[in-house]
View 1: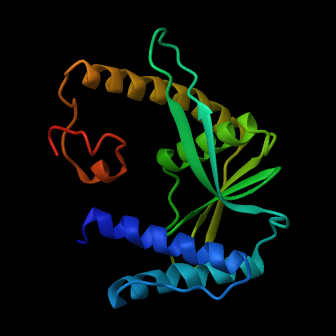
View 2: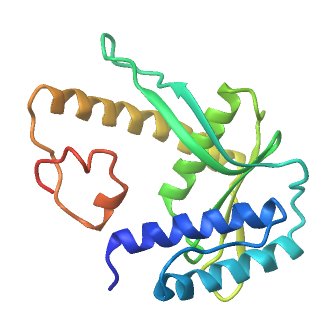
Length: 197
């Protein structure tokens, strides 16, 4: 099994190449041969998706970084900032590209809901459709989430934000990390200050 940082590197390089393709440029991949081989399939699937999708991505912005203050239910907490980098956004569509195979994982929905909240706060989208495009299988696959799924995940997102802020506040007071080391540590925003890592 490859180490977690390899998958993160693969995702970053694939996303950089996708952005170059969307801008009409030939992608340049600066990586060793193993990484280049790993990004071939997702990039090939991205090209297939681009040629076959019925989604209107004209006028889209790519790799758009957005920020907003985190709405907290905990009074007297420091102000925290929610930051996201959206792969592709139009006023009525947010797409997040995944280099893996299609899965309906909660993390994927939560990430898209966070992007929706950021986009609406920054007035770059209003009630957008949320779509994951999975590029790691035999063929590219679009997964669009229903309004019902989005509403459910929105409340879970706010609960998660408050939980993370509560953890940060507790860590500042000297608490040790209340979790076990796992593969998911690569996604943890506290990995660099974790006393158990």
